[in-house]
Length: 323
Ligand SMILES: C[S@@+](CC[C@H](N)C(=O)[O-])C[C@H]1O[C@@H](n2cnc3c(N)ncnc32)[C@H](O)[C@@H]1O
Image 1 (tube, rainbow, N blue to C red):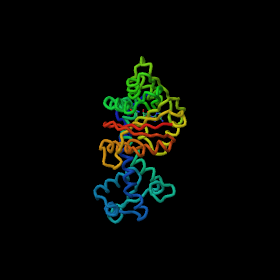
Image 2 (image 1 turned 120 degrees about the horizontal axis):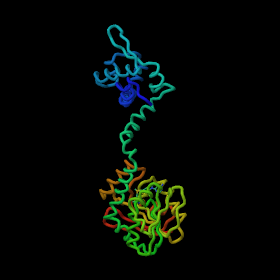
Image 3 (image 1 turned 180 degrees about the vertical axis):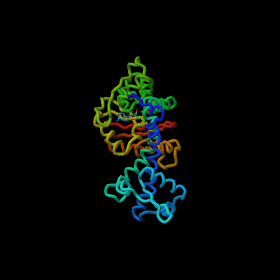
Image 4 (image 1 turned 60 degrees about the vertical axis):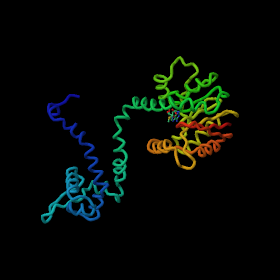
C-alpha cells in the first residue's frame, strides 16, 4: 500500500499504535481505582473530591480524570467556578461494575494478567530460540547428576527403556552408557524431538530412537522400564495419577517405572535446593516438588508395587516401582 505524502511526513497511525498501551493503562487505572463507580453513585464531582474519596493523590487523580476526558470516558463541565467530572454514556454502560453490560472484569483481567504477559511477547515470538535455551538448561544438569540417577538402582534387567518426556536424550545417553544391553526410546512432543534430533542426539546413535506423542492422550509404546525424569513435578495430583495410570496400563507384569525427582525431606527441613525448585514450579508450572512418601503414594495409587527410594546425595534422587 502506498503512503500518502501526509502519512510520510507525519505517521499518525504509528503514533496512535505507540500510545496504545498508554490509553489502555489509563482506562484500566480509572476502572480499578473505582472512578467510574464513584461517579455513577455520586454524580458529577471535582477531581479533589474524587481523589479524597478514592484515597489517591490530588495531582495524580486530576491528571487521570483529564486524560479520561480526552479519551471520552469522562465528560467535564464548569459549575460555579468548579470543574466537575462525570461519566459518559459509554463508561456508564460498560465500565461501571454494577452495569448489566459491564466490561469491568475484562478490563481488570487485561490489566492484571494479560498486560504482564505481554511483557514477554518478544521471548514468546522467538520461541524456537527460547525452546533451545530451555532444552540446554534441562540437559546441562545431567552432566553432573545423570550417571548417579541411572546407576542408583541396577537397571540392567530392563533392556528396553522408554524415557517419557525424555527431551534432549541426556538420560537416554546415560542409560545406554551404563547398560550396554539397553536401548532407549525418547518419547516427547514432536517439536521437542525435532530439536533433540537437530541439536542433541547423534544420528549415528542406533541404540536411541524417538517416539512422538502426547503422553496424556497418545499410545505409549511397550517397554520393560519407563523413566519419568522431572515429569511428575510439573503436574497436579490429578494429572500425575492420569499419567501414571496410563503407564501402569501399558506395563506388563514385572515392568518398572523409575521416577527421577528432587526430593523434599519428610520433616520439611530441606534440602533448600528442592524447596527453591518447588517455588520455581509454583511460578512456572502446575506442579511442585514432593517428598518421597508423596511419590510412593502416587505410584501405589496408580497400581505399582515394591516401591523403593534411592538417594544419590546429589540434587536428584530416584524412586523405582514395579507392576
Ligand atoms: C521438565 S522437562 C524434563 C525433561 C527431561 N526428562 C529431563 O529431566 O531433562 C519436561 C519434558 O516433558 C515433555 N512433555 C511435557 N508435556 C508432555 C506431553 N503431554 N507429552 C509428552 N511429553 C511432554 C516436555 O516437552 C519436556 O521435554
